Length: 212
Image (cartoon, rainbow, N blue to C red; front, top):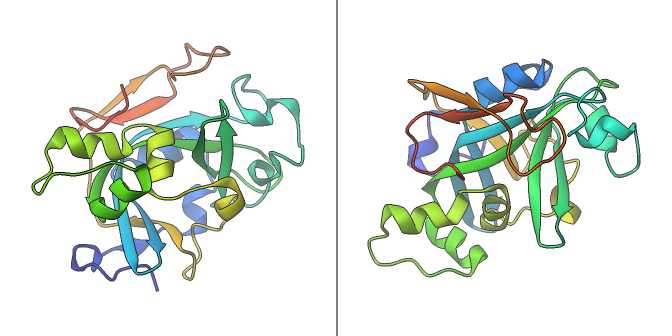
């Protein structure tokens, strides 16, 4: 069963592997508004995806798969619907999900979430302190950026790289609660130098939780 111990997640459904068996551009747009969910001990953490980027495989100079298949990026060439986690700048982890048929690399990078449940645990994971009635600014600091959300959800490469986010027993999943973004904005990817102008960053327009 999906991880639905919180009543606010009781009507969700687990997204199937076929969802990811597509072009990363399509997957990225359709993942906006979906819920990233983590079970950590007795805690349930959930955040709505508000910002995401597509990486297109071996023909995309900015993609980790551009250099071909390696031990490090093996997940990108494997079955779709698996977490690809990498460590960047020697500081933080980033969460991606593999797309496309097996053998054909592609992925999406989850860049920002709107916290939904488990904010106190997220704050502890981030070594932050929330007020008794957290402000939007405080909540934004939890998951507005790929490094922040990975830390908030205790996502690391040793723990999560290769994890199947479509598996019912997985402690890291992406769920659909029926939310639909009214408007989606498209812009260039950020934090990269190669193919930086490609319009492959997608955000829920108007969200105050995006990274930039």
